[in-house]
Length: 237
Image (cartoon, rainbow, N blue to C red):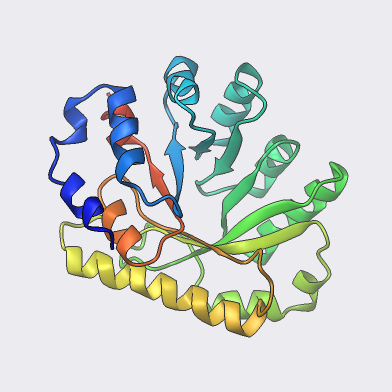
């Protein structure tokens, strides 16, 4: 890892700065190969526009109703990522504009995304959400469940979705060794799925892992995408 990456981590904690300063701090130390998803859930459009004016274009939301309320009020070139648990009956509301659904965790959900994408004459990109934490409250697939989906005739018949990679959420813990182990597990799953189901397919390329408290570990373990909210916008009240 670049020595600058580690040296910059010693700078004053970003939570003491304003939104613009927080954003610039992270952008300056985040490797250029890693995409930053600014998690804007529960944030107003003014805060989002602050980042937009500073060049940020990828934003993540975890509630469909909040997303469809904000989307018309903001610039059309924003790439919206859905990062929360997505109910099938909400897919139709985001299907016309969503850039990436990071939380596809069942064949039933993928089928509905495909159906709504077809209605909107789109191909919708998705990540398979994998279960890597030890917390029962987390959603996601096991590697075995993902393999069953990708092997199924139903999935193979879907023409309007594109699986771009995997996403995972580590355990909420201060144990960095445990977090690192879980991120490593996700990277291993990505590698296995790539070689087994997506060999030679360049679009299967993303590993979304790491949030405000653990994104530096995620980058060290191979993340291509990190999802950061409070470290940019500050803690929610």
